[in-house]
Image (cartoon, rainbow, N blue to C red; front, side):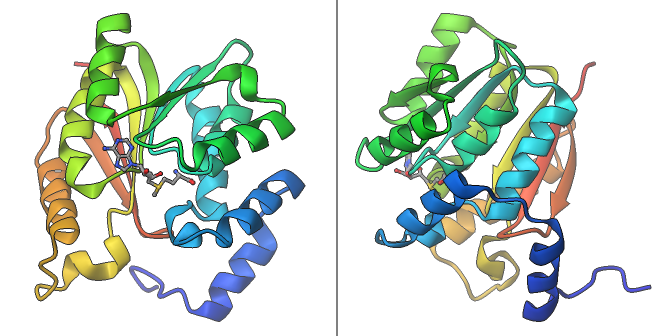
Amino acid sequence: MAEQLVVSDTLHAYMREVSLREDEVLADLRQFTAQLPAGAAMQVSAEEGQLLALLIHLTGAANVLEIGTFTGYSTLCMARALPPGGRLTTCDITARWTDIAARYWQKASVEDRVELRIGDARKTLDALHSEHGSGHFDLVFIDADKSGYLHYYEKSLDLLRPGGLVVVDNTLFFGRVADPEAQDADTVAIREFNTYLHEDERVEVSMLPMADGITLARKLTV
Ligand SMILES: C[S@@+](CC[C@H](N)C(=O)[O-])C[C@H]1O[C@@H](n2cnc3c(N)ncnc32)[C@H](O)[C@@H]1O
């Protein structure tokens, strides 16, 4: 058996056909976002959204932090999966797209469990630490500016409880991470981040070749 199957467009279409359960609200948000500049590229894929919901269910995460809201697709997937009383704090540097997000959270009746913070994530993470201290969150999803990933990861580890999960998007970065000729700032930042994580003994790690690459890092309990 092959170590890693190459997913052709046909196979990808088949996978979607037999596994996706994107409902009307999510499909509507996807269509709406696709009309925005770079909308489709910014938003998580439907299968990634579904995985995020599954991870929340699997871990029982009740306090979730998201870095990078955009039009709120991933937020919506995770918010719906929260247990009763659960809360999702999501942040973005601009409110330009988050009004759209808020509209869809309302449509899906999850607005009461979502808290949106606007501002540079560096400041938001510091504020969250001042408010809650270390170990408050069960799961953190990082999907913002790539140059900030290492910083967000370090802060997230502190904000996470032992046994909590960090989920990081775009860790294969269009496949550019494996192309030595690709030396743009974002690719270099993701490469450095991946290497850093590989050597980080505070977490156990798994890198999934799904969508644009998703890394799971679970904070060890000892
Ligand atoms: C890839 S999009 C997030 C997509 C979102 N998870 C979804 O599924 O629709 C990245 C977002 O990060 C935000 N961002 C960029 N730099 C940021 C920063 N320094 N602090 C907070 N958010 C930032 C951008 O404004 C953008 O909305």
